[in-house]
Amino acid sequence: MKEKSENYRRFSTAKNACQKIESPSPPYKLRKLSEEDIPVLQTLFRETVLHVNARDYTREEVEDWASCGESAEHMKDLLARNDYVAALNERDEIIGFSSMNAEGYLHSLFVHKDYQQVGVGSLLLSAVEKRAWEYGVSEITSEVSLTARPFFEKRGYEVVKVQKRRANRLELTNFVMRKRLKD
Image: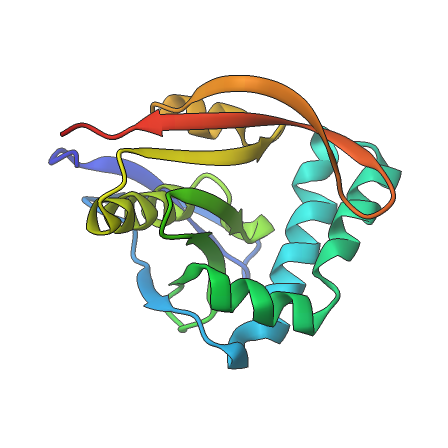
């Protein structure tokens, strides 16, 4: 982890403004997710896909993809099969989440549309990578959207292949990516 200070922008939703702050780390906290968080996760997932991923996918594609999070039972199953972590803002609101299983498959990383590019994604990815070390895996793999690909590439992930993956009705382009962890 870098020791030097990095610049982060803090969004003030009340003032609808950005303020640049100097900080060694984002002012966010992490915590494990539980079934009680499912409604918030569903909303965050849907809103992120509809607003952030709309830059790289058609309206029809993002609507189809966003519908994948509508089933609370499906989300409950994902929580049982993966280790989920949430990023919280200063008001303890969930502003992002990520998950990984014991084999090193990074299932998800979603950041609220108002907290993009302020360190939340990096914080979540660092937490997942730390968890991978705890699991003893040598490589993390994930299926990454067109939108998220540059984020992962900047953090040492490489594209293994381009693929089409079914959301509900439609097949969307994404990338199988991996990062080998150092010994």
